Image (tube, rainbow, N blue to C red; front, side, top):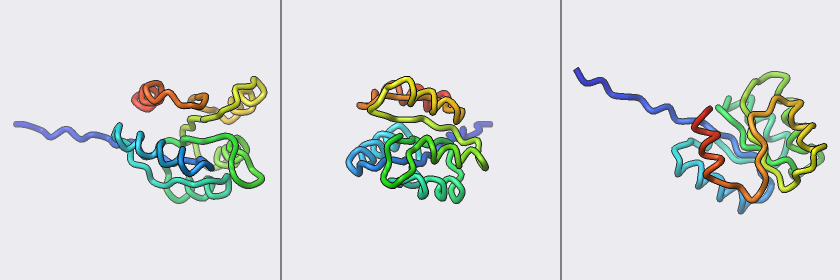
Length: 125
């Protein structure tokens, strides 16, 4: 008897303060089969969205609107969630990466994104 295979769609939260980049990232994630649950532009909204939506992963920009950066927001998220985080940054300074590593990050990508590399990471989730 033939059994239908279920494809597990990975559910994503995008945290990006640049609306154009957020739209590009959403289109790409959808094209590779992810469900984008929401896109937010600041740390407080990211914290709320993770609580409400329980995504499989967060695509997190480091520099965000507001007073809180993405790493700080992830620190708060870690208090209640082990969601995987893929950081995205235009800044590759070692201090930034060291701060990000303290949040148990899944990956750290430098802008502009290499979508092939991002797809490989998501496939391994």
